Image 1: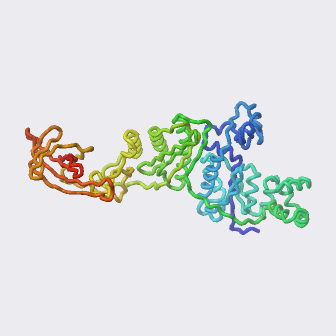
Image 2 (image 1 turned 45 degrees about the vertical axis):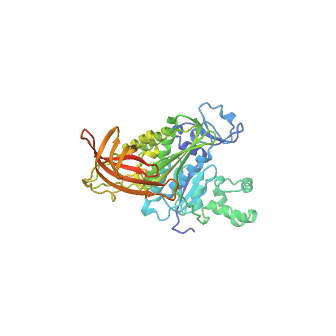
Image 3 (image 1 turned 60 degrees about the vertical axis):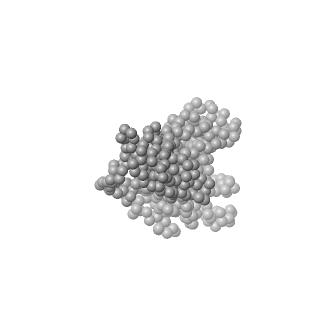
Length: 502
């Protein structure tokens, strides 16, 4: 007898290799498709969809036999896409319970979810099963679910039944499993041959065998198989520790050189990302695209907008602009997309804070500017820990948080125009002070001179610096006044105008 507190939901997706290659190719799902494996010309069918099954496709067909079907689409099996789809399916199942046991094999995805005690949170088992299948279908996979209080009863029933949702009532495990064939059990070929000689084809026939006589003929394995047929075999649950990783991988059917064809596949991968992070009340903070090129080279780019967002057209446009500015140098054979999740919190500005631009327009504008002037020239300036002129660095632009926003203050200080690069000037000194200077082909007589201020640093490096700064007020012959800041490089003995004051 099983404890009343146990309840399991078994999620099963058959023909997994074919479903994995079709998940990111939605335009092919309504056509007959087969997945083949092996080295040419000895390739054989390993998986196919329902449309191909209706045409008479069976596992093991050769490529020559497939060429007789005119409407059939043949795709190579992709282990990379299977691993990615397998991780996504486990992540989807983990949204319903933290206790998951993975029982997948090479041809089918199979996991058992411990849903005991989730009724108050997720509703009755039937409601949970429908919601689970809905989320799996959004991921691009067709599956079925069986629910039972016995672990192996749910696992065996979902393998042998054609129902998308099945609920085995407590105490009805044996009758429910009775018509299922023996192939739903993990049975050795030797025992399968023995049962075939005895005329036993179903689980009900195995369950009806006398236990002692069965053990005396095939050993303790007979007792286990009989308990499986009756839905009574106990199980020690081994949970799977899933990690939340946003990664999608796709091997292209043919090498791609046009950016538009690449973005079509990237669009489907972004759609999968957004669905997964939305289920966790998160957003995409950054996306990294890795392009595997012909010749085994890899082209990697990372896009990070000002704020985390789930706006798919925005992400697609940012990736397009970045790849146009940094195109790959060869044809693309595979695409890998990685994303970093972020918070979906909104930024609330103060009453006197300046209005920020619309997020999509801001990020697209910044991307276009980066394409013109370079990545290192776009961002927010941050001062370095030094007194050296122009001692700053450029960091990626970030929208300020609500805590950092402050009311605008009115200052009466003069406006300062920094000259980049500084312009040379000819200086006439009198008593070691500037008396006149020539700037932009115009001579100015110094009326007021403030300084000098001496600054030096980085004595521990080869590129040391030592400067003498003067603030001057000069007037030309026609009466025009100029307020500027001159700097004298004490190492090179040169004068430069670095700042103009309004």
